[in-house]
Structures are given as structure tokens and as C-alpha cells.
Length: 264
Image (cartoon, rainbow, N blue to C red; front, side, top):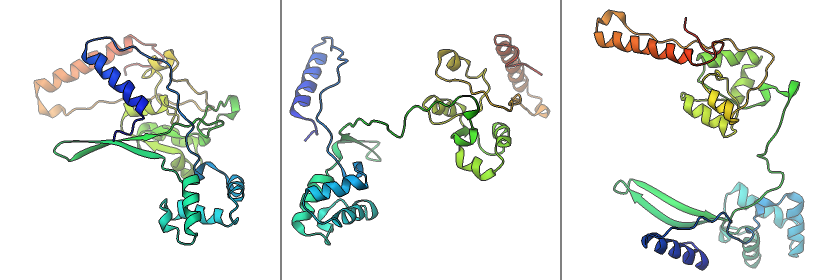
């Protein structure tokens, strides 16, 4: 059992044979044709559920019973729906509770301590999905309405953002914190929120259009980056590291806009 259709198995076998023979495998940019995914009870709103139950000739209250089993009790096993006649259970399960995930294969590593499972799920296209592009311009830009990604509480970037919010609870509900600047940049590139980051750090992302600046009413103050060391160690290696850090910082500032980064 591979979880693949006969056509997909044949295509996979052909690709493997071509690779083993040293031939070039053609790159297909055409998406494979697939059937429509099954309709699940979660895809229907209250009105559609009532209509679906009526089309099956079942009592109206069956909709509430099915909703309770699937979403309150998290039970997709019709054998557990004992308050519904058996024949109706089977019908409802077939029509509105089809399996959405199919296990394809398991792989183990690290002497069985790591297990990876490949699942297969039918794709679905949505119109007007909840996750879509929203454009705010001018005075409509309100940081309190946006998910904020920044460093943990009491860090300098956090203290710069906090004055924009009169209510600490509002800030806490909008805030996602991370200790990794790399992670923050990737999160905002992927559209998970906005962040207060010095423009000089993300200048390549801004130039390429991956990120865009937001004009806000209050200007963010410069973000100081401070490096400290113990001068009492009297170790030459420490002084060499400090000198190299100073040279690197000076070289970096010399290559960017003086208004975006400078040494003090």
C-alpha cells in the first residue's frame, strides 16, 4: 500500500527508471488533474447543513447531533454515534465525514527515536479565503490591528513598540516574540505580521520587494547595538576580537547610508 493512485504509481516508476538510466527527467509545469476533494461537514455553514440533512430526508435535529459528535466530542467513528440509528449513521459518515488524511508511509531514523509520517490530503481551492491580501493605506494603518513580531519583553525593540499601545493587554494580544532576528525576518516575509527592524538590516529585502516599510505617525528612535567585554582579563585574544569587531562595524557603516547606521 503506497497511498498513490495507479496513474501516480506508473508516473513515479517511469521517473525512477529514467533517473537510474541516467536520462534527464523532464520538468513538468502542469499541475496533475485531480478530482474534487470530498465535502466535509466542516465545509458547510449552518444553513447548508440544514439543507443537506433535508435533502437526505432526515430529521432536522440530525444536523445538531452530527455537529456535536464531530466538533464537541471529536468523534468521527459512526459506531460511537449511538443516539443516531445505525443506517443513518453510516449514511451521514459516508456523506459528511470522509477521511481527509491518508497515511502514505512511515520512516524511522535514529534507532526508532525519530519517526516521520507522510500524509496525503486532497487539495482544495477557496474563494474569499480567510488568509488573503489586505491593503491598508494612510491613516488606516493601525499597529493595534496588526500582529507584531519582535524580541521578548524588556528588549530594546519591545520598548520601542510599547509606546504605540496605551493598553498593555492589547500589545500582549498582538505580540509574538522571538530571540532570533533571522526567524523574525522570515516570519514577516511569509506574511505572519509586521516588525520594528532597522532598515539597514533588511536593506536587501526592501530593495527586492520582499518587505515594505510602513509609515507611522511616531518615528522610531535609533536602535543601539552595544558590545561589551571584560577589560580585566588582560588576554590578548579578547583585545584582538574587540579590534576586529570595531573594524568590521566601521567597514559595515562605511558601506551603507550614513543616516541608517553609524558608530558612536
